[in-house]
Each structure stands twice: as structure tokens, then as C-alpha cells.
Length: 432
Image 1 (cartoon, rainbow, N blue to C red):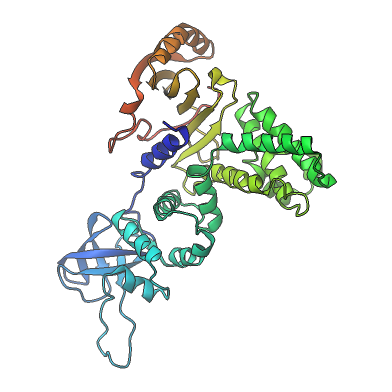
Image 2: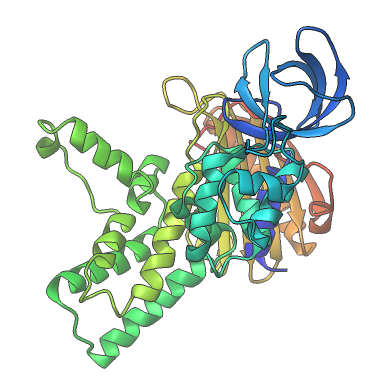
């Protein structure tokens, strides 16, 4: 079983049900069914998988399907029926036919196969259709020829669910993170390319040489040691844009604050060096996309949503010499910090002798429970031997080890059942 495909499957499945499709907002378009008509332009509508009463600005017939534009999301909800464009031959305007092709043409776009499938997908998922997003997608199709339609649909769903910027940058970054070559594989290829250049005495210009050395050094440092979470994020470059914003907003203080070079900053610097980037261009682009994808996981417009972060752990962790990842989840407070009262952590470990393992760690009011999903049973014995040591260390920092459970890994991957971690969480304690 492949760890990257497992992570992708769990991550996308875990959040496929996290949408709140009935959270209407201005400008959204839905295909609705008229269930019942009431006086004063009120109608009972089935919309986005939910039935409710709204004010509709147009005459309707019971049982018909029609495209509806949200004009007012607050009570009373007001919807506008999208009508066919008027012409010389039609004195009586009619509702737009309830087909994807009709809506796409209405928005001034060409109804190609990809756009029709996207509109159908959004309808099936009870997701809103937003005109400018569909127009952007039409323009971006030329930039995304390598992306499978099923992958593009899942990424669009993720962007809508998490209120992320709808752009080619977001799509490329998330595609690299979820479907592209893994971070560990890219780092290994970088190291191989660096060694080859050293052996072949390939010449780079001075600026490129300096960037390549810094990047290689940072990669080795981040892959060989633990850092506090804040320092870790800064070293990866996941706070790079935030740091630039601070420098712009505090020009008088920027000279007094010392900043260390981040991995993303150095990769961008090398990427911008036209003469020196050639030897690494096939690696700098996916590496930057991967880091940007990590940053997008941290972006949320709303304060009550779950913050997420995926990080690759150093190779020395538990002899995980192939792949080891940690997923942190926590609720963002109003002051921008993570709630320290509760936590949820998932450790994804690919061990040479024990195969794939997932440690599901939940903390509620400093009471900790662990559930191990294992591929090979010898991992159960290894974890059981660690229990007393864990209990003692946790007690020393004020935590109580409550329970330890074990299940085969195949019980985690079924189906349509909710996965561990799909219930709402209240916070994240980064000291664990």
C-alpha cells in the first residue's frame, strides 16, 4: 500500500462531508426544484439537498427545475430565477433551461466537455456554481492540461469547502500536494541532483550556487532534527508571505528584527535566477507548489473552522526511513492563536519492518487516548512496550494517558463510514 495515495484518500474523504452547502451567499447559482407555491412570491424549494421557503422573483410552476441566483442570503432568503436572454422574437421571457449547457452559454462561455462535467459535479455535490469561478476555470483549462478531470473536481470541491482563493496557483499547489510526487521523493531527487552536479563539476553562477547550497543545507537540517513548531513553520517557509506582509507594515522595525532564510524563500530565489535555475528547474517548481499547498491548508476565512497542517517528520523518527508524516488539527481562536485546551494528531508512519501505521491521538482536557491502525501485528508489541514510558513522560508534563487501542489498517479505509478525526475538534496543543 502506498503512503501518498493513502494520505490523499483519507484527506479528501475526510473532508468531503465537511461542506455546509446550505450556507447561501450572494452570487451563488443553484439548480432548484419548486416543491410548492405560496402567496407573496414565496415558494418551497429543494435546493442544494435541503428544502426551505424563499422569496422568488419570477412566476414559477410547481414541480419544475430552474436555475436560481442568490440575491439575499439573510432571512428572508431571496432568489432570482435566471431567465433566457430576451430577443426580438420573444415577448414573453422564459426561465433558462435547467441544463449545464444552457447555464454555461448564459455565462458567455463555450460548453466544452470539461465545463459541462464540472457543472454536473457541482450539482451532484450540492455545491454552489459561481459565475466568476466558472469563467476562471474556463481560462485556466489551457494551463492545466495534465490534470485529470476527477482530480480537478476534487480540488475545486476542496477550495470551495475551505473558502480558499480560486486561482491556478491554488489548483497547481493543491494538485502537487495531493496527487503529485511526494515531498520525500522530491527531496531525494534534489540530493541526487546536487551530488551529480558536484561530481560533474557543473558550473552555476555565484548567486545560484549560494542558493543551491543553502537549500541543500536547509533540507538536511529539517530532515535530521526536531524544531519547535513555530521555528519549523518558519524554516519550511510556510510563514514566508506573512513575514513579507509584516516587513511592509513595519518598515521602521524591519531592520532590527533578524530573520533566518527559509526553504521556500531560497527556492523562489533560485527559481527567479534564469541562468542558474536550469539544473534544478524540474525540482524547484514542484517543491514550491508543495510548500504553497501546505500553506493553503492553513488558510481559513472563518475563525470556527479546523486548522490543518501536514508535515514530514525527520527520517530518524521511529526508524521511519521511507515516509513519516504528522497531521495537526486545531481550532483557531479570535486572537489568531490555536486553542491549547484540546488536540487531535495523526501520525502516518511507513516503517521498514512494520509497514504502514497510523497513530490516532486525541487529547481532551489533557486526557490522552491513542488508537493504532497497523499493517503488521509486530507493531502492536512495539507500541505496548512503550506504554509505561509514555505514561511517565506525559505525567511529567501534566497529561494523563487514558487508553491504548489497536485495529488492523484495513478497518480505517472502508467506505463511506466516518473516519477517525471527522468529528469537530476544539484545539491543538503544540507541546505534544
